[in-house]
Amino acid sequence: MMALIAALVLTRTAAYTSPRAPVVAGNWKMNPGTAEEALALAEALDAVEGREVVVFPPSCYLEAVARKTNKNVALGAQDACVLAESGAFTGAVSLPMLKMPRVDYVLCGHSERRSLFSDDDDAIRAKVRGALDAGFAAMLCIGETQQEYELGITDDICALQLAKALEGVTAAEMANVVVAYEPVWAIGTGLVCPATVAQRVHASMRQRLRATYDSSVADACRILYGGSASPLVIDGIMRQPDIDGVLVGGAALDAATFNQVSNFHAGWWRTRSFLKKVLHR
Ligand code: PGA
Image (tube, rainbow, N blue to C red):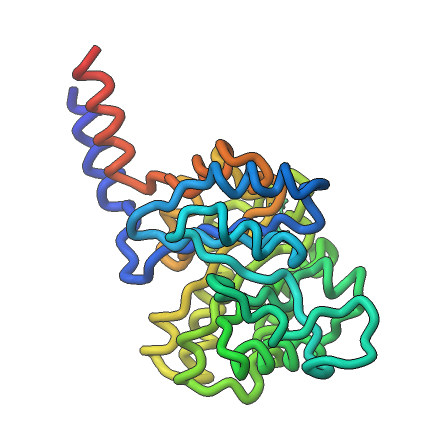
């Protein structure tokens, strides 16, 4: 009994206490393979009170997904072309074209865009700028490679990516920026960055925002973790004081799994539901 009370107290103190509304975002990447599957996935997503659930489907599915998902689930585009509003840019989709009902976010700087599509710091800065100017919120991804992690230069790499992408972004505009720390070595590998390590990086990025802007910007900015996030690790991640949500890839492609992530229990709520189960046995 004493152990149970101690667990209750300890878990309660570690509960999700941040004043920042948590974000659970699903990046579908180039999935699923058919519109039917995309709609089935969209339809089965939970909206969770007090949390912002966002999904980033391929842009060709955006309109249909908006019609099928719960109206409290927000949508975002995985990328946007900021070279022009329209014109001879084969294969590209511009920001005005993404101005569809319920599309609130544009993902900028995802590591796959950086590595596979050569989005460099200038391109990413232009996308953040373009997204904000067009009235979207920017979800900015930053993160170090495995080699950089092993060299112990994670904070420097992330700080540099953050500074470059946010160049020219004002304190007021930061209300429309969400940062996602995604260690490249953790993306799609099943290797999750230990929650305490991610917490340290998040705290360091928040400190950078404090130095660049001020405490109110730093304290209000949501910083998400991304990289093999799943129901198995979400509760531990969300107990960290500077982690305000997750950007989920693989685990976002199965509605039940993604819903488990969205319904995370960080702290005493988990204990409460556990107690309920025990007492009703
Ligand atoms: P993952 O992807 O969850 O499959 O690692 C995360 C991401 O790419 O944003």
